[in-house]
Amino acid sequence: MAAKEKLQAAKDPFCDSNRVGRQLGFSGRYFACLYDVIARTDGHLLLITKEHKAGLLDLTTQETGELFSMINKSVKASMDLWNVGENAYCLMIRSGEASGRTVDHFHIHIIPRKRVGMKDGKPAYDNIYEKTLQGEERPFLASIEEEVKMLRRDFEGARPAISAVTGNSGKFAALDPELSSNVFYESESWSAVYNPKPIIEGQALLVPKRDISDISQLSREEAEDLARTYAKVMTILLKMYGDESRSYITSMQTGGYVSMPLDRMHIHLIVRRNVDRYTGAGDHIYYDLYENGSPPKVMTEDEIREDVAALRRLV
Image (tube, rainbow, N blue to C red; front, side, top):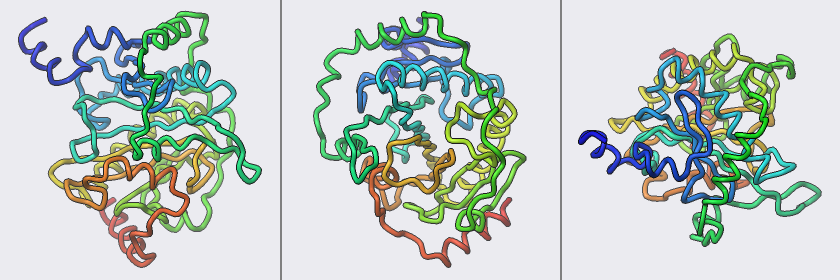
Protein backbone atom coordinates (compact mmCIF):
# COMPACT_ATOMS: atom_id res chain seq x y z
CA MET A 1 0.00 0.00 0.00
CA ALA A 2 1.40 3.40 -1.01
CA ALA A 3 2.09 6.04 1.65
CA LYS A 4 -0.86 8.18 0.51
CA GLU A 5 -3.20 5.16 0.59
CA LYS A 6 -1.98 4.21 4.08
CA LEU A 7 -2.70 7.72 5.35
CA GLN A 8 -6.19 7.66 3.84
CA ALA A 9 -6.92 4.21 5.33
CA ALA A 10 -5.80 5.37 8.77
CA LYS A 11 -8.44 8.11 8.66
CA ASP A 12 -11.08 6.11 6.79
CA PRO A 13 -11.82 2.46 7.62
CA PHE A 14 -13.64 2.01 4.31
CA CYS A 15 -10.36 2.72 2.48
CA ASP A 16 -8.60 0.00 4.52
CA SER A 17 -8.76 -3.19 2.45
CA ASN A 18 -8.01 -5.38 5.50
CA ARG A 19 -10.90 -3.98 7.53
CA VAL A 20 -13.27 -4.06 4.57
CA GLY A 21 -12.26 -7.65 3.80
CA ARG A 22 -13.37 -8.82 7.25
CA GLN A 23 -16.80 -7.26 6.81
CA LEU A 24 -17.28 -7.89 3.08
CA GLY A 25 -20.34 -9.83 1.98
CA PHE A 26 -20.29 -9.19 -1.77
CA SER A 27 -19.38 -6.48 -4.23
CA GLY A 28 -20.04 -5.08 -7.67
CA ARG A 29 -17.81 -3.00 -9.88
CA TYR A 30 -18.18 0.24 -7.91
CA PHE A 31 -19.84 -0.75 -4.60
CA ALA A 32 -19.29 -3.25 -1.80
CA CYS A 33 -21.83 -4.59 0.72
CA LEU A 34 -20.49 -4.94 4.27
CA TYR A 35 -21.88 -6.13 7.59
CA ASP A 36 -21.83 -3.16 9.99
CA VAL A 37 -19.50 -3.75 12.96
CA ILE A 38 -21.52 -1.30 15.09
CA ALA A 39 -24.92 -2.44 13.90
CA ARG A 40 -28.17 -1.10 15.35
CA THR A 41 -29.76 -4.50 14.82
CA ASP A 42 -28.71 -7.85 13.40
CA GLY A 43 -28.73 -7.69 9.61
CA HIS A 44 -27.60 -4.04 9.55
CA LEU A 45 -25.62 -3.71 6.32
CA LEU A 46 -23.52 -0.97 4.75
CA LEU A 47 -23.19 -0.23 1.06
CA ILE A 48 -19.95 1.68 0.34
CA THR A 49 -18.16 3.00 -2.72
CA LYS A 50 -14.96 1.11 -3.51
CA GLU A 51 -13.32 4.36 -4.54
CA HIS A 52 -13.24 7.11 -1.93
CA LYS A 53 -16.21 9.45 -2.43
CA ALA A 54 -17.55 12.03 -0.02
CA GLY A 55 -21.28 12.01 -0.75
CA LEU A 56 -24.13 11.01 -3.01
CA LEU A 57 -23.70 14.15 -5.10
CA ASP A 58 -20.10 13.07 -5.86
CA LEU A 59 -21.00 9.81 -7.62
CA THR A 60 -20.31 9.43 -11.34
CA THR A 61 -22.98 8.43 -13.84
CA GLN A 62 -21.47 4.93 -13.99
CA GLU A 63 -21.54 4.56 -10.19
CA THR A 64 -25.11 5.81 -9.98
CA GLY A 65 -26.06 3.28 -12.66
CA GLU A 66 -24.93 0.40 -10.41
CA LEU A 67 -26.22 1.90 -7.18
CA PHE A 68 -29.87 0.84 -7.41
CA SER A 69 -29.14 -2.79 -8.29
CA MET A 70 -26.69 -2.99 -5.37
CA ILE A 71 -29.28 -1.46 -3.01
CA ASN A 72 -31.84 -4.04 -4.13
CA LYS A 73 -29.41 -6.94 -3.70
CA SER A 74 -28.37 -5.73 -0.24
CA VAL A 75 -31.95 -5.15 0.95
CA LYS A 76 -33.06 -8.56 -0.30
CA ALA A 77 -30.15 -10.26 1.46
CA SER A 78 -30.90 -8.44 4.71
CA MET A 79 -34.60 -9.32 4.57
CA ASP A 80 -34.00 -12.96 3.51
CA LEU A 81 -31.39 -13.68 6.17
CA TRP A 82 -32.32 -11.58 9.19
CA ASN A 83 -35.89 -10.37 8.68
CA VAL A 84 -37.69 -13.33 7.12
CA GLY A 85 -41.29 -12.61 6.19
CA GLU A 86 -40.92 -8.84 6.60
CA ASN A 87 -40.22 -6.02 4.20
CA ALA A 88 -39.48 -3.36 6.79
CA TYR A 89 -36.23 -1.43 6.71
CA CYS A 90 -34.61 1.98 6.59
CA LEU A 91 -32.09 3.31 4.06
CA MET A 92 -30.04 6.17 5.49
CA ILE A 93 -27.20 8.29 4.12
CA ARG A 94 -25.37 11.01 6.06
CA SER A 95 -23.28 13.50 4.09
CA GLY A 96 -21.06 16.16 5.63
CA GLU A 97 -19.86 16.71 9.18
CA ALA A 98 -23.03 18.41 10.45
CA SER A 99 -25.14 15.38 9.46
CA GLY A 100 -23.56 13.32 12.28
CA ARG A 101 -21.50 11.18 9.92
CA THR A 102 -18.43 9.71 11.61
CA VAL A 103 -16.71 8.20 8.52
CA ASP A 104 -16.00 10.60 5.67
CA HIS A 105 -16.63 8.04 2.94
CA PHE A 106 -19.93 7.56 1.09
CA HIS A 107 -21.98 4.76 2.63
CA ILE A 108 -25.63 3.74 2.90
CA HIS A 109 -27.06 2.16 6.05
CA ILE A 110 -29.59 -0.64 5.46
CA ILE A 111 -31.31 -1.24 8.79
CA PRO A 112 -33.99 -3.98 9.18
CA ARG A 113 -37.07 -3.31 11.30
CA LYS A 114 -38.12 -6.22 13.50
CA ARG A 115 -41.73 -7.04 14.27
CA VAL A 116 -42.14 -7.49 18.02
CA GLY A 117 -45.89 -8.05 18.24
CA MET A 118 -49.24 -6.40 17.59
CA LYS A 119 -50.68 -3.18 18.98
CA ASP A 120 -54.25 -2.03 18.37
CA GLY A 121 -54.59 -4.66 15.66
CA LYS A 122 -51.51 -3.43 13.77
CA PRO A 123 -47.96 -4.85 13.61
CA ALA A 124 -45.63 -3.29 16.18
CA TYR A 125 -41.91 -2.94 15.44
CA ASP A 126 -38.77 -2.62 17.51
CA ASN A 127 -38.04 1.04 18.29
CA ILE A 128 -34.39 1.00 17.21
CA TYR A 129 -33.80 4.76 17.39
CA GLU A 130 -35.40 5.09 20.81
CA LYS A 131 -33.15 2.29 22.05
CA THR A 132 -30.12 4.00 20.54
CA LEU A 133 -30.94 7.20 22.45
CA GLN A 134 -31.24 5.15 25.65
CA GLY A 135 -27.82 3.58 25.05
CA GLU A 136 -29.19 0.03 25.13
CA GLU A 137 -26.56 -2.67 24.75
CA ARG A 138 -26.59 -4.78 21.61
CA PRO A 139 -25.10 -8.18 22.58
CA PHE A 140 -25.33 -9.63 19.06
CA LEU A 141 -22.39 -7.41 18.10
CA ALA A 142 -19.90 -9.57 20.00
CA SER A 143 -18.93 -11.33 16.77
CA ILE A 144 -19.90 -10.70 13.15
CA GLU A 145 -17.90 -13.51 11.55
CA GLU A 146 -20.88 -15.84 11.22
CA GLU A 147 -23.09 -13.04 9.86
CA VAL A 148 -20.50 -12.21 7.21
CA LYS A 149 -20.31 -15.88 6.24
CA MET A 150 -24.10 -16.00 5.91
CA LEU A 151 -24.04 -12.96 3.67
CA ARG A 152 -21.33 -14.44 1.46
CA ARG A 153 -23.11 -17.78 1.17
CA ASP A 154 -26.35 -16.00 0.29
CA PHE A 155 -24.67 -14.08 -2.51
CA GLU A 156 -22.71 -17.05 -3.81
CA GLY A 157 -25.88 -19.16 -3.98
CA ALA A 158 -28.02 -19.10 -7.09
CA ARG A 159 -29.43 -15.65 -6.33
CA PRO A 160 -31.08 -14.17 -9.42
CA ALA A 161 -29.75 -10.80 -10.46
CA ILE A 162 -31.85 -7.95 -9.09
CA SER A 163 -31.92 -4.57 -10.72
CA ALA A 164 -34.11 -1.51 -10.83
CA VAL A 165 -35.76 -2.51 -14.10
CA THR A 166 -39.05 -4.08 -13.06
CA GLY A 167 -41.47 -1.18 -13.08
CA ASN A 168 -44.38 -3.51 -13.77
CA SER A 169 -46.66 -2.53 -10.92
CA GLY A 170 -48.12 0.68 -9.60
CA LYS A 171 -50.16 3.15 -11.62
CA PHE A 172 -49.65 6.87 -12.04
CA ALA A 173 -51.63 8.55 -9.28
CA ALA A 174 -51.96 12.13 -8.10
CA LEU A 175 -50.76 13.12 -4.64
CA ASP A 176 -53.32 14.10 -2.05
CA PRO A 177 -54.02 17.85 -1.78
CA GLU A 178 -51.90 18.36 1.36
CA LEU A 179 -48.83 17.17 -0.54
CA SER A 180 -49.63 18.42 -4.05
CA SER A 181 -49.95 22.01 -2.81
CA ASN A 182 -46.32 21.79 -1.58
CA VAL A 183 -44.78 20.53 -4.85
CA PHE A 184 -41.93 22.85 -5.88
CA TYR A 185 -40.32 20.81 -8.68
CA GLU A 186 -41.39 18.03 -11.03
CA SER A 187 -39.49 15.81 -13.42
CA GLU A 188 -40.95 13.19 -15.73
CA SER A 189 -41.19 10.56 -12.96
CA TRP A 190 -40.77 12.43 -9.64
CA SER A 191 -42.26 15.22 -7.56
CA ALA A 192 -40.24 17.22 -5.04
CA VAL A 193 -42.51 18.15 -2.14
CA TYR A 194 -41.97 20.32 0.91
CA ASN A 195 -42.89 18.09 3.85
CA PRO A 196 -46.21 19.39 5.25
CA LYS A 197 -45.08 18.39 8.76
CA PRO A 198 -41.33 19.06 8.77
CA ILE A 199 -39.21 18.18 11.78
CA ILE A 200 -36.60 20.69 10.59
CA GLU A 201 -36.66 23.69 8.26
CA GLY A 202 -36.27 22.77 4.59
CA GLN A 203 -37.25 19.09 4.89
CA ALA A 204 -38.38 17.82 1.50
CA LEU A 205 -39.67 14.58 0.01
CA LEU A 206 -39.03 12.98 -3.37
CA VAL A 207 -42.14 11.04 -4.38
CA PRO A 208 -42.56 8.88 -7.51
CA LYS A 209 -45.49 9.72 -9.75
CA ARG A 210 -46.41 6.05 -9.87
CA ASP A 211 -47.99 4.62 -6.73
CA ILE A 212 -45.31 2.11 -5.75
CA SER A 213 -44.28 1.00 -2.27
CA ASP A 214 -40.62 0.08 -2.59
CA ILE A 215 -37.42 1.07 -4.39
CA SER A 216 -37.24 -2.35 -6.06
CA GLN A 217 -40.31 -1.45 -8.13
CA LEU A 218 -38.60 1.43 -9.95
CA SER A 219 -38.05 1.05 -13.66
CA ARG A 220 -34.60 1.77 -15.05
CA GLU A 221 -35.91 5.06 -16.48
CA GLU A 222 -37.35 6.07 -13.10
CA ALA A 223 -34.09 5.21 -11.35
CA GLU A 224 -32.07 7.29 -13.83
CA ASP A 225 -34.55 10.16 -13.48
CA LEU A 226 -34.31 9.88 -9.69
CA ALA A 227 -30.53 10.39 -9.83
CA ARG A 228 -30.93 13.54 -11.94
CA THR A 229 -33.83 14.87 -9.87
CA TYR A 230 -32.04 14.21 -6.59
CA ALA A 231 -28.94 16.12 -7.72
CA LYS A 232 -31.00 19.12 -8.85
CA VAL A 233 -33.27 19.27 -5.81
CA MET A 234 -30.58 18.68 -3.19
CA THR A 235 -28.39 21.36 -4.77
CA ILE A 236 -31.31 23.79 -4.52
CA LEU A 237 -32.02 22.83 -0.89
CA LEU A 238 -28.37 23.29 0.07
CA LYS A 239 -28.34 26.69 -1.60
CA MET A 240 -31.40 27.85 0.34
CA TYR A 241 -30.91 26.14 3.71
CA GLY A 242 -27.31 24.95 3.91
CA ASP A 243 -24.10 26.47 5.25
CA GLU A 244 -20.41 25.98 4.58
CA SER A 245 -20.55 22.39 5.88
CA ARG A 246 -22.74 21.29 2.91
CA SER A 247 -24.27 18.60 5.10
CA TYR A 248 -27.43 16.67 4.37
CA ILE A 249 -29.30 13.48 5.18
CA THR A 250 -31.03 11.21 2.69
CA SER A 251 -33.37 8.61 4.15
CA MET A 252 -36.11 6.22 3.05
CA GLN A 253 -38.24 3.91 5.15
CA THR A 254 -40.34 0.93 4.12
CA GLY A 255 -42.76 -0.49 6.67
CA GLY A 256 -42.43 -0.69 10.43
CA TYR A 257 -42.71 2.98 11.36
CA VAL A 258 -45.04 4.95 13.58
CA SER A 259 -44.90 8.16 11.59
CA MET A 260 -45.10 8.02 7.78
CA PRO A 261 -46.55 10.91 5.74
CA LEU A 262 -47.80 8.54 3.01
CA ASP A 263 -47.76 4.85 2.10
CA ARG A 264 -46.23 5.48 -1.32
CA MET A 265 -42.46 5.18 -1.55
CA HIS A 266 -40.80 8.48 -0.63
CA ILE A 267 -37.32 9.75 0.13
CA HIS A 268 -36.57 12.32 2.84
CA LEU A 269 -34.09 15.08 1.97
CA ILE A 270 -32.91 16.92 5.08
CA VAL A 271 -30.32 19.70 5.07
CA ARG A 272 -28.21 19.93 8.24
CA ARG A 273 -26.20 22.93 9.41
CA ASN A 274 -23.43 23.35 11.94
CA VAL A 275 -26.06 24.92 14.20
CA ASP A 276 -29.68 23.78 13.90
CA ARG A 277 -32.40 22.48 16.23
CA TYR A 278 -30.78 19.03 16.42
CA THR A 279 -27.22 20.20 17.01
CA GLY A 280 -25.67 18.07 19.76
CA ALA A 281 -28.76 15.87 19.98
CA GLY A 282 -27.32 12.94 18.04
CA ASP A 283 -29.96 10.65 16.59
CA HIS A 284 -32.93 12.49 18.08
CA ILE A 285 -33.56 13.65 14.51
CA TYR A 286 -34.23 10.04 13.44
CA TYR A 287 -36.37 9.37 16.49
CA ASP A 288 -38.58 12.34 15.58
CA LEU A 289 -38.59 11.32 11.93
CA TYR A 290 -39.47 7.65 12.41
CA GLU A 291 -40.50 6.71 15.93
CA ASN A 292 -42.23 9.76 17.36
CA GLY A 293 -45.92 9.64 16.50
CA SER A 294 -46.27 13.36 17.33
CA PRO A 295 -43.01 15.07 16.35
CA PRO A 296 -42.60 18.72 17.39
CA LYS A 297 -44.15 21.31 15.08
CA VAL A 298 -41.37 23.59 13.89
CA MET A 299 -43.05 25.69 11.16
CA THR A 300 -46.44 27.28 10.66
CA GLU A 301 -48.46 26.66 7.49
CA ASP A 302 -47.75 30.24 6.37
CA GLU A 303 -44.00 29.72 6.80
CA ILE A 304 -44.16 26.51 4.78
CA ARG A 305 -46.08 28.26 1.98
CA GLU A 306 -43.47 31.03 1.91
CA ASP A 307 -40.64 28.48 1.63
CA VAL A 308 -42.44 26.55 -1.13
CA ALA A 309 -42.83 29.79 -3.11
CA ALA A 310 -39.12 30.62 -2.59
CA LEU A 311 -38.04 27.15 -3.77
CA ARG A 312 -40.23 27.42 -6.87
CA ARG A 313 -38.50 30.69 -7.72
CA LEU A 314 -35.08 29.07 -7.29
CA VAL A 315 -36.08 26.18 -9.57
